[in-house]
Length: 219
Image 1 (tube, rainbow, N blue to C red):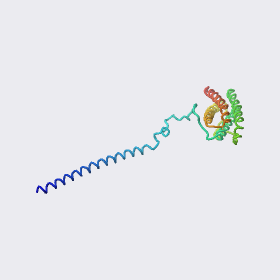
Image 2: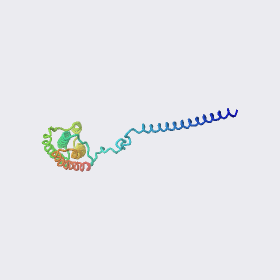
Image 3: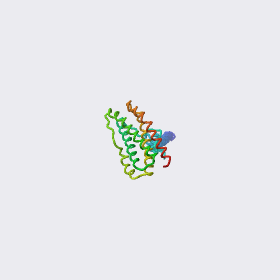
Image 4: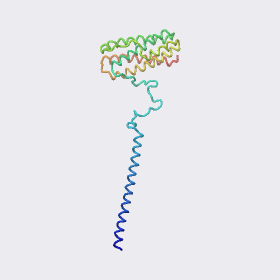
């Protein structure tokens, strides 16, 4: 009887150990599985590259385009031809809005400014034309689409109302033009175009300063 009992006892102990081992391994697999789910969830919640600063949502009021960025280049152009077309449009914007100002009963200060815009931007286009011709670019002789759309509304104004709108537009236009000139000066490899920008930029910055001063006078 003892001989029969001992083998049975040994078999029972082996079976018990096997069950215990199986339970421990099962718990380990469950833990690993749960860990894997947590990791996958984190990966799903945070798309690749989302931690990069450029992919983070901008904070309210952080957009530099609001009011313009006086120190940073804006509206850079893909190539010299595109830049020269834009520069010529900018000249025409200021020339034609300034001609409008002279017919709208504005103050003597605004008239002086408008005459200066016509003189300087006409000269700017004249100096750019041979550089553009050498590059096979035909410069536009009219305002850009945005300013054409704006013109009818400005035509309805006169006197002080027109003058305020005109000066505000001169500030916005010259800020953008100055920043664009700075941007393309770093991009272009054309020595003549570099020279034109070097000559034109201080003039545009002078126009911006004059318009900003007039705007701050609260006409």
